[in-house]
Length: 353
Image (tube, rainbow, N blue to C red; front, side):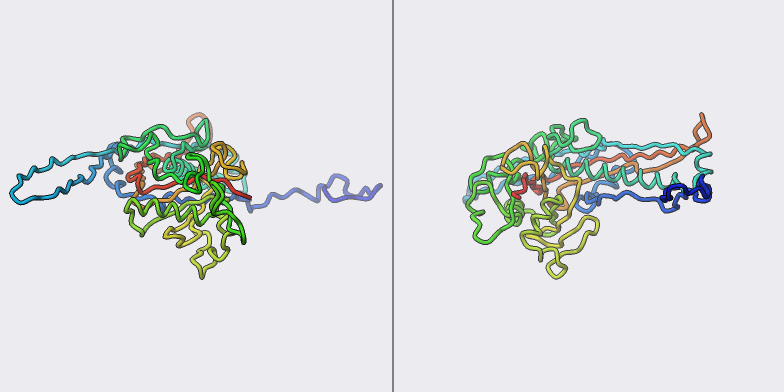
């Protein structure tokens, strides 16, 4: 009996008439929002869903235009049939056991609850890994080192001049983009304040200025203005709110948190918020000055930039041959590919607060 009793009180001393009751309402854990399916395309899913582990994608040939002079001999151009590959090479699984006796005695359906949680974990792992990949980071709860730079090419690179992370250095937004900061270092992001000399301080920028620069990078690569997306972490989202809280009001394009979507249009981007973006060191709040040790990463792009394809996404159960129990297991087999690195931009930043 948990309730206090006065000294010398001896009625019902064993507390047998006050049993412990287990609630049928089980407390569920919070779930992160998945955004990868909103920002990538599945154009090649149908071609690989039934067989094979590789799709070879032929690139549009480049044509050279030359000046013509009357009477000059014309030399035809040989067309190049350059291609690259999308490989289905990522697989994750879960497996757990539900004992018959425990299931019979339980007042809640733990098998169903565990299956729901396992399906969420597979989806979350997929979201985390792909967001890291398209940002240039090996970001996964399965990795021995979280948020290490990605140096492994999946299949073959879509653009030969891309780095080992399959991205273009020219599409990175860093301290060098703002008032002469050091290339490769993070930007100190602060909301605009009255009389602030932010715009003239080395490597400092407002959150909207960072987004505008990412938009310019895409513009310079002729990326269509429609179907652009931006994924930010909660720290950058807070900086945007401090910059102008009206951004998140419905009259100004705010949408509320729906599949990670928080804003319908900022500098031409649909803005999503995710807790699965990579971060180096202690992340965006780990340092108060520019540097390469601690920073957060945000990314932007076009819906045609990255493709995902899955072959297996299944859950099944079977009897455990060695005990009286059911084993439930599931597997997710998928691939992802950066198709157009010129349509992807990322920014390294730290909060100036």
